[in-house]
Length: 443
Ligand SMILES: Cc1cc2nc3c(=O)[nH]c(=O)nc-3n(C[C@H](O)[C@H](O)[C@H](O)COP(=O)(O)O)c2cc1C
Image (cartoon, rainbow, N blue to C red; front, top):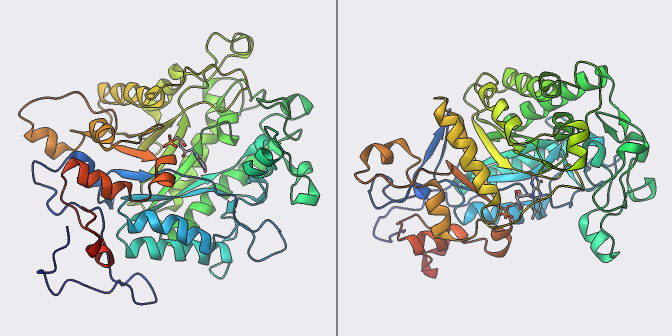
């Protein structure tokens, strides 16, 4: 709660090349106050401290230039400054830039954001740097999610499908698509299925040489992101995109070192993480989003080929510390049309709780992010309450075990960009308000 008595209070931000007051909305005025919920206590991961545990989850906006011959292709724009900037201004601890493709054929839609142009003069670099500078001026940290869509690439943005009353519309060359360059772990028309009958483009199986290029592409994008000032790197290993396609025996039919056994199916992921850790500073946190299960247990396809399920994720957990992963962002599904999900408010959160418990049981320290249907302040507080060590040490009454160390939220932030301010008010947490907004009585 900013007070006009604390003069001089308005300090210009050093993060931007123009004047703007340095803000820190959503930061607890006294994080050590026992009444400050864990949700509003800082979280230090390596050298990066998030001022609170509220994270804006990655959200593709399909709003970048699609023309590969344009210098603007894949670059963020003023739209992203407005979209992501509002969350930074209004107090989120960490703001995710949407999934950014590490190679042009890794774009879900031709209008996806990308980070494959590493020149400091490139629009991809400069536009990311601009988003970072603005978010930093508001006291938020910034994460990028590095991604490759694999066999699910080259479709038009979802609103095109909505308008066409179709579940999915493929992008051909006339709409900026790249049907002949869609790749996956396995190739051919048999791999073009989706959940709807519309289908994707038939992918081409990546060669081992191309896999090595892909690994380097992830590493280079991570390096570029760090140069642009990004604080946290996340690898997108979920939702049926390329890394997930490799992890699952349903989509990975390879017979070489990248297919078959658990060890082989996780090889691409392990190589990507190792390559990234080798090029980013040791102080930069590395996060991994996975689909903890593809929800195929009991389905015919799983009986036929096996599946990636919770047991597989549990098997992955002990590998994460040595791969330099600091936080596991627990999502699920998206890899197969016959997934059977009993959707309810806690269906993702329960997975996060289960994996966090397993991590703690083995004495490892990987943090966990919960995502999915988090909308309410009380709910978010309950998920992370007690997750900070200081809080846990001082607790006189032991409460329920925390489900996660951070909460990630997507759709609620679109509905309510000032969610952090509203949550602070509801929970009685005393937090900073951006100085320009003091007159609005936000908290
Ligand atoms: C518009 C939109 C775009 C999304 N884009 C991404 C993305 O780029 N990467 C990703 O991992 N998840 C993406 N998601 C999933 C969200 O990050 C989140 O996991 C999911 O929406 C569940 O959280 P929620 O209930 O708070 O919305 C997207 C969701 C929405 C609604």
